[in-house]
Image (cartoon, rainbow, N blue to C red; front, side, top):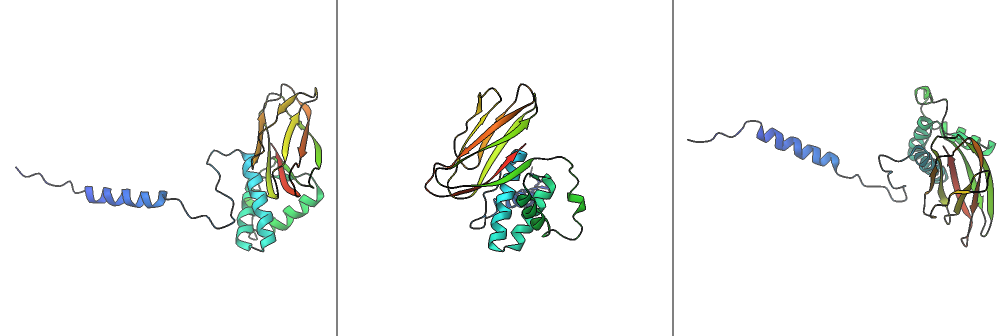
Length: 198
């Protein structure tokens, strides 16, 4: 008795080949930030988009700036300083004429840019809600990666992450309180960065 080939076998093989081609990694442009893992936290995604926008604006790369601006609009990041607000306004101008659908988020992470010379440090105060996961992410735009430390009102150190880019710090405050965030540049040159609070 001869066995007949299943008619759908060739179609199945073709489908597997197509899916395999779709799953292959896309090349990353030189100088572009590495793609984030699918489960990356919102604060990390904001930090990555901020650095991408700043670099695209500096390089006059309109396509990359549109992409970064679209990400920032979707994430709903809020600037904490007038200078950062002006930069965000410039970046959002790169979006198409009707971006309203992407600007629907009322609340979102807050951020600010910073610059520290060699050996300099800075302290920021930020209130985080008790019982809710808190996160601080620092992403370097240019220069060395600063050291980051977070302390609560009782001066207890809640987080001192390893200085790798991006620097990520996550904890759950026992109650709503103001925290001190200390950033120190121990490198030999100036460091420019964005810090995101979520």
